[in-house]
Length: 369
Image 1 (cartoon, rainbow, N blue to C red):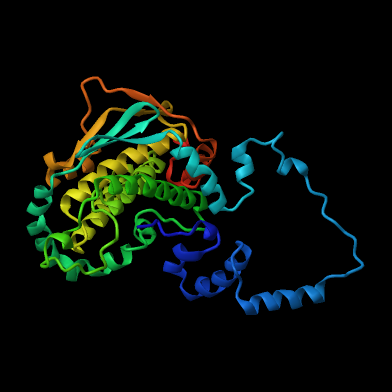
Image 2 (spheres, rainbow, N blue to C red):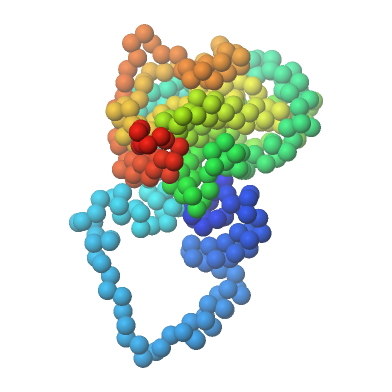
């Protein structure tokens, strides 16, 4: 699942606006952005640009731009400022390694994987036993009764969820470019983490257990637990909740964001490609990633709770949903939980600040961000 806006199309249209603006952005931005983002332009456009150049240049003209060297100088600007000169995809390529640098994975036992920050345990996920997954086949088959009702959502959410979030908060490339870029970066980062857990746990999918499941969409070629769609939806909901935290409609908005995140995850169970327990693991991981990213952006004193554990087999959907909707932690912590200090990532701090400014209109003047 993506927050499906290709980094190169941020601020220019692309997939996100394609949901709303249709053929205009599809044709105009498809060719224009293809060439100006470093991609391969449509042949007719390349020829048209060449002929246009011939009619506008003067070979005898010696005029040159006098470039302000400070715009690109390492001696004057910090890295966050320099990054603003590059395309979003380049910014992401440079920022993701910084976010991933302190993260390591360690096998605690056959069923547990520990996500570490440096040498400190941050989050332990516990995989259910195979018999537990087998016991949930009946649940998956029962969820299939909702396919006719949920079908349009399921098909749309295979690759795109931005339109769904934008029905709650009015996001648009031209109006909220920083927020969009932040969410793309956040979900891209989440993929690295969730895929490592999926690989380590190597949990089969429902279709591997029963021919009665018959998924309504192709089954992804990676492990089931934890659920990636739920993980990324939880990250998006967490970050958007932070951005609107001072709105007078904060409580209502945050609850809707959480309900949407849960429904996106639940739709994957209805589709027949996940177990209910996969959703729970994805939610726990997504909440942690959301907190980690905000800490790396200078929030919460650049600290995050450590020594957290989530044992999906000992949790029920009803219990976890109640905790999540109320804003309570879904992971368990020791009596005296540790706090882990993270390294601030300057570009992420700047991107979050610019995202906050895009939502100032939601905040009464006396408590402006």
